[in-house]
Length: 463
Ligand code: 4AD
Ligand code: MG
Image 1 (cartoon, rainbow, N blue to C red):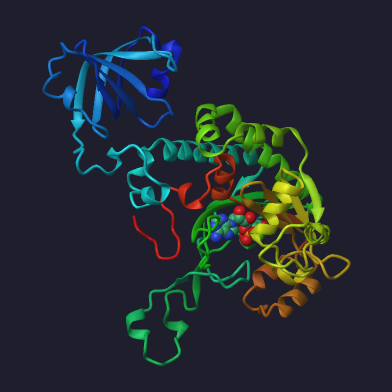
Image 2 (image 1 turned 30 degrees about the vertical axis):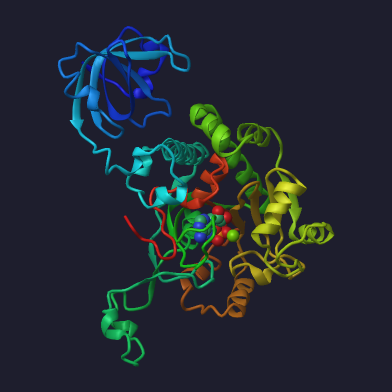
């Protein structure tokens, strides 16, 4: 018997085939006419496969009629056209084998509806719900599109280190990596001897692979990293995680305009792949998570992104009649409320903000001729705010050293990074897309903790 996925079994083209399907029971309904409908799902698609189990199955009374949500089953039989609406096929079972029972009294997902907060407590089981299943399939599509887009454009996939000694973003939000015995250190009153630690100096989990990506962009021209990054920022928001995934392209002989074009083409590609390949899941998000999502995404794909400088954005915000919690002034960082106003109310679509004040951006961004701003770009989208952060990099040795000194960074710590400006320096640029923010944008999910399998945030490292 041919084992096929629920996704394949639901295709009209599968009608008349004898198949085997393996999955978990979602619901069971018994008909008075002496047979049962079992909805089976294996995660391969949003919809369930309807199994029709006749009363003459050998284990009908003993087992089939005792099936409850969560039981695992192997069903074989013939796929036929379904008379029911919303499904092309159904499986007429010859055999329903129960693989694992699932006690309905203790199974947390037995009840139909749970809040997303509650489901986080069962992160090991929540992948079986409609919403989390759809989120993970969409997340998978985005990852696939990321690799396809960059590979097709001739980028080399580069693995940058997870353990590092440098703080790329300079925000001091790094997790310490050590083999020193912390229990012995606390309360000793003595300063820590970093020479005794595993790497002989302080080491951290990376906040970004950018600096290392820049070194290889200076050799291979076009590279991208895609991996986990870590930030110990104590922000309990719906857009921040302590562990998240970031894709970071870095390109040599590239300036800010090239970088903006790349970011727009990239986001549009990811978007159209999702629209083309995840219709069933997107229909669900459109109906139950965010009304109008599909129209919104389709419109974005068909229009050029809006552009605005930070200075113009500050003027727009100051002119607006919104009561913001945080005041807006040139030189201060934009808050989520400001970003959302700009992208949602002011332009109603993706917005690329450029040329931020040098004082609020990291040392590596290229200083502009006005010496007050840097060649930075943030891409903001409705519903999320900042989804991409990037810039043209400072490629002039003296200017870079000046920026490092001003930021309190020692040349000795970043000697290898500085070397790139000594040996065949070229204009180059890149950006970072937060994968989870992209998933939020494309699903309409309100909380970033619900778009990653196992979220890490302050006070939570369960699972
Ligand atoms: O703007 P960020 O901090 O930029 C960088 O790290 C650059 N080194 C990237 C580069 O130029 N190669 O972060 C980039 C993106 C943000 O726009 C956001 O989408 C995401 O990473 N991000 C987070 N996502 C979830 N949780 C957090 N705590 C995040 N911090 C940043
Ligand atoms: Mg940023």
